[in-house]
Image (cartoon, rainbow, N blue to C red; front, side):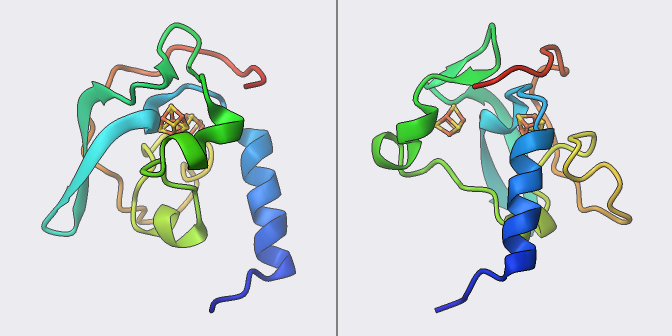
Length: 109
Ligand code: SF4
Ligand code: SF4
């Protein structure tokens, strides 16, 4: 089993704090030829008007397909290229998006 290092935990904590709650990563996606492709279908639990997840604290139980962000998933290109988590990563393998433009601002979930 892989262990999470102190450094990774620090990174994950930072991730929570810099998320802009735009909700765009909560659209359904699939992988094709090593590329992640977003559909225009939002997760059923996404409140599109606020960008918030309606089940955030319970999402692992209620919606097991909800992927927790990990350094590996981010490196695979799961987040939109202008998401704050990845916008400064050189040669980031950005997904193909069929989702709405970023609209909402930062607010607690
Ligand atoms: S795309 Fe980035 S900023 Fe927007 S909700 Fe997802 S993780 Fe947060
Ligand atoms: S369960 Fe919540 S966090 Fe997970 S994809 Fe759906 S709306 Fe997003």
